[in-house]
Amino acid sequence: MFIPSIIRFWLFLIVVIPSSFCILFNLYYFLVDRTLRQGLNNHVIIIILIFDFLYNIFNIIWLTYFYYLGNSLSLTPSFCLIWLYIDYTGYLLLLLLAAWGSIERHILIFNKNIFLRKQKRFLFHYLPIIIIIIYSFFYCIIIYFFRSSVIAPNYVKSRCNLTYYTNDTSLIGIWDSLINNILPTLIIVIFSLTLLLRVWYRKYRLGQRFHWRNYKKLTLQSLFISIIYIILYFPSIILNLAYTIGLSSNIGADLYSSTLYLSYFVGLFIPFLSMVSLPELRAKFKKFFRFYRRATPIVAPHILPMNHLDHRRIVGKTHLAK
Image (tube, rainbow, N blue to C red; front, side, top):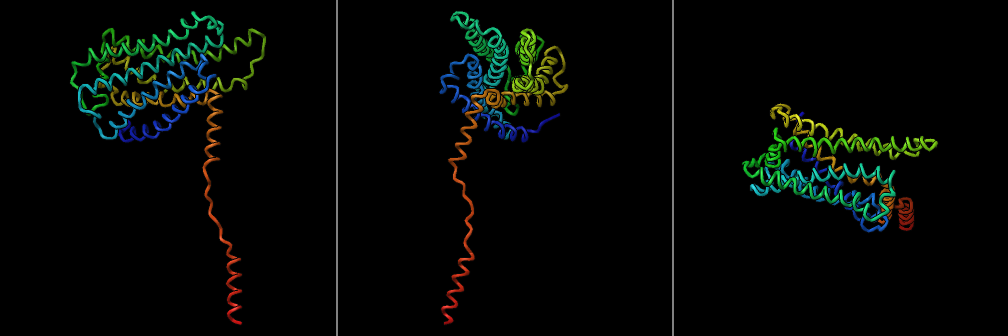
């Protein structure tokens, strides 16, 4: 399966514009609304949206340019390294933050008292986010800036063809495949699905009835997150692991290229998912949309009173005849 470059270009162009608008809309209300801004459950989402917006502005736009013209935006080795660094740093950062967000949701729902004390709030809420950001930035600096500099860039390949350098059998390649790709994806899927099961078990243990209608949104959200990561992420990371442990890069090269391209849509779908899953943002979006429709004047065709004109013409002719 190979996706032509022109189709990749149009798919990116169609999705990246509403996705970026949705990110700005979400961030505006997250940062302006004090209740949303101070909610611990929203902090990871805010950080994800900020980095996701930067990722779209730089990496996705550069990829869109590449798919349209067939070459890198700048034909210099330094730009290729910067492009590669932004591409994988953003990918790794968004994936790890989403994985931690999936874990933290369990803590916020079932052990929320742990955040009442400042020390534990810093230890279990702020510190993991700080560690993820530092790890993502420094890991990619060490891997790509110090190791990829010896490779001659190919400007007619995506990311100058420097990405494939990590597909080796070294310890770094195995670490990158297992720890940075497969493990976070499994955490997102498993913790999203088990959240619903834990809610059901808690109701069962307390002797309360579990009404599926009351948890319809949580069910759909968990399934949607799991399906997105399974369909869009898993194929590329499984192939990447296969290449790491010795599979020839010539086998399934087109499939790997296509699945790697589809994985970018996870970041493009994140703002829509955050808007749908949070009732506060959904309500504000509906209010904004109603206000926009009310403020936009509707121009309707004006029907001329033809009967009245005909009557005047008849009167005029009668007067002349007299």
